[in-house]
Amino acid sequence: MTAPKDTHPPSPFLTPADLAARWKVTPMTLRRWRKAGKIKASMLGRGVRFALPEVERFEREAQA
Image (cartoon, rainbow, N blue to C red; front, side, top):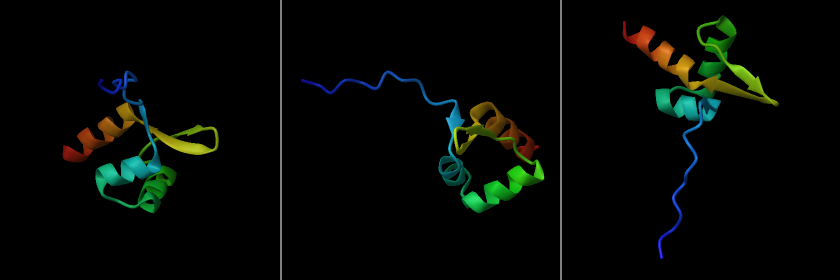
């Protein structure tokens, strides 16, 4: 018998910890960039989340 597959699509939002790991920076760096307006974030409940399209936009602009 096999374990059921996870049928949920990937989340369209990243937590600060997820994004910090992806970019190899600290969550404090992300907080500074967000406050400086370099990257947009959303408040979901009491937590900050970064939308995946915004993350990908930031990555494209950083490569240019």
